[in-house]
Image (cartoon, rainbow, N blue to C red):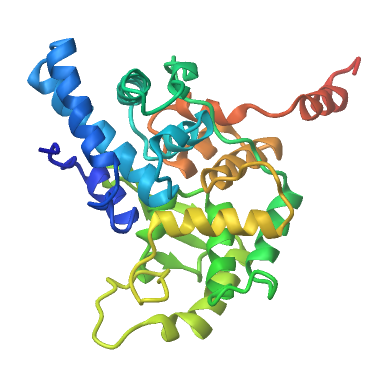
Length: 328
């Protein structure tokens, strides 16, 4: 039997976002059964360890099948694995949990290679994290502006251009996580004072300031599109952002929206929703914001986590040096 899906809140959300999860017809399901059988007989792993590996690979295969639309496990590349690990990183999992997932994925791809299902093990190049996984590259302000314009343009042929534009404006204006954005309700918006109330990890509440452009974009969407998306009698829990079926938007939908906007904006490098959070923090720090303020807006418990976002390019550091050093 397949192991029971992860019962954590994160696991439930991930499978919901993956729409239909692992379909019965995929070849991944029997491979997972064989993999767990291999671990039990060849590796002699304990029941608890087998359960952990099973949950990790179950969610990993859900992602490959439902999000990346892969059908052949032999076609998985290092890029696919890195995409998945970035998704895990954004959920705020501990480095030890990320490391365990990497170990599970390494073992699974080694098994695929040994059984002749794949020619190589792409996961062998993935390194265990020391402190944190590599974050997405920061976007500059021009790239973000192009993506926002592209999301609401006629070229993108979106059925919800105002919603799509408002989503990107909010991600960049507040630095909120994608999960926080998809769970945002109308009652959490305070346009009259320029703040958004967000519930982060562990249901910790914080107030984030948001700029005029973000609130204007949200207001346009609420007035013109949200009412059209609502379905009679359907409960949305007053979610701000709805999909075309009238339900709350999923993280996968935001992920796809960002990819599409990047493509129409002419950005060829990989772009992820988390890049907006990363850019938000980096641009604030480059503009002179203090680290403690950025920490509060991001909702980080430790200042050490916020310091990850201080990696700025060398040209900016050189300019700061020239501007402020007496001998610059």
